[in-house]
Image (cartoon, rainbow, N blue to C red; front, side, top):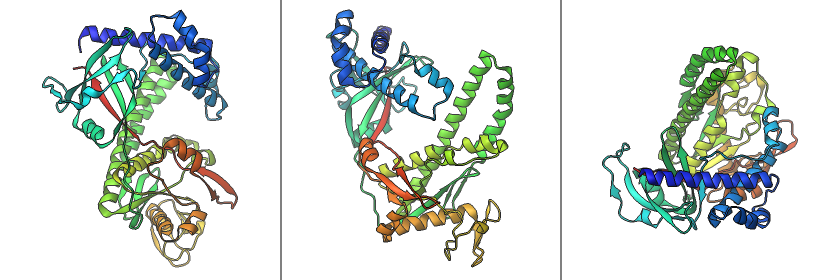
Length: 437
């Protein structure tokens, strides 16, 4: 990408985000894009005639979505009080925040023609494709090259490219990224095979019903290594120390994310090779209902089980592996041999020993076996299993429809009924590419 093209895209970003800020300041409480269009389109066009019409329309959608998010966060009890104070102000947008493109402002037909090889690319396996973008220059588009690697090309060939995309600028590297959404049809899973139960935990990240264990040793080593540095920086409480703390937190989050990606990929591949569905516990709301000792709190609430579960779910759905969520009640206290349930079956955290039949083993492995049994019950006796709160994750259903329709009423441990919704997901698999060379 030439310097001239880079300046054109940066100027377009600045114009787009200035328009967003202008609309947000005038209409901070409007959450409907249709209402916002009626209120501000003509006025914005008259005040800023140099802004393309499609940029104004996209800015209205961006502001309406930001206002809606801000409004829901103000109502939420999970948002901290300090953050809520800033939410009373209108939404603001960075100078070089991403631009939303749609079918009217983006032409991707050049992506499906013969690519140009780029031997000087630092990515090695990527090829150069051409797209056309609308910019701040009215009625004049800019043709830029997009580097796509083999994985991105396979994703594009496998699914249907959606009409919307994001143009993002990363100031640290000085590169532009175009983020596409690909609609991929999920294969129907086989619901007549076996079930691989997975128990998610803190000490052992995941234990499978066949005995495979993924420990948290690497994560805990990393956390302890940075704990002393964190304490020293927190004691200083200076702007530079807070900036350093933020960097450490981001690094830990990336490390956990990478670990979860690796574990979920291995689990899904193992389930696919053995022809099994995957059964997980529905742990929604567990952090709100449990208390732990102060010395154990950092490790307990740093447990990224929700992220790992989401990774397993979306990878399994793309691979054609069925996913089952089971009611977690008593899975760690029930004997898989005789069915006896008691707290006394767990003499220690790591040990399980049935008081009735003497069955013993590692507690996490026993829990995974019980989760697998709950999944098998859903296959053999679906009505009985549904009453107990076990359910299949539907495939090829948009996230909005799943939130509306796929709510289930399951029995809680106390016998009262609570409503749990199926974890949300999206059929769109993102394919990120570098714009330029």
